[in-house]
Image (cartoon, rainbow, N blue to C red; front, side, top):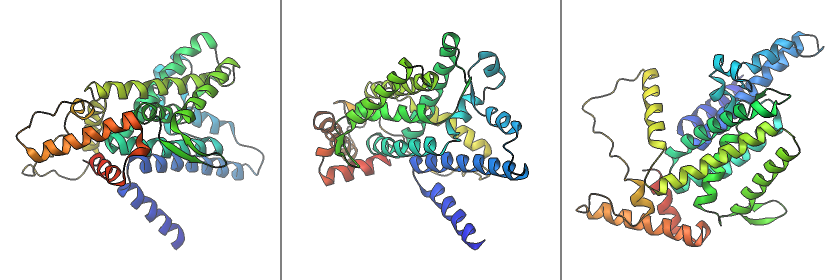
Length: 309
């Protein structure tokens, strides 16, 4: 039992100290393990004669319904389904791409924007799944999995760093834009062949949200701000720690319009902040023109430190 206690301590430490990509990966895999442990327990309790029907009923309770009548009375499915997996290869594939796209997004636009993109991408994907069922009438009227949310991160990094090179087994270095475009092509083929069409439509919806998010960010509209503000408020409701009113407030991040464009913000008198912003602008411009892989080690380190601010 000491071994399991040590593993649990490691997981808690990684969740507490890790970035948002790590937390999302732990959450998704933890739910997958819990679901299959329940499934195994029920199989054993049933003397190996199959899984009772009420397991599926319980699983569907947390899935995204395909009929609007059901969705009205199960609104939590819009959220819970994007963390829910039952199949091993489904969760492994999503975790691989979550790590790939999430890490790049975190490095380029900051850790605090990873979860809002994930959340909004999953929600848009679920809404499109629900709407598309009106005319496609899917034989399996529910959806689960993080694919739509992960595709939102894919859409974001496609716009941020299309020429970023990723090392793939047997293929060597491949530019990110080709990986994402192949994924989109597979979704379109799946829709054309009526193979899990609802899931593929949800993927494309998540992808579109990620693209939209970055273009809005470049225009100075950070869609992550209201999401993080709401999440912070919800977190505060459940937090037992008392806040010290005398504690200094955290300085807000500079507007992203200044980050992606040539504007320099409102505090031009602060030479240190101005120098920092100018350097960040120059690096982001270089990424747009030449790709992330052409940054120097010093520029990558600066960008990494800037993403934590």
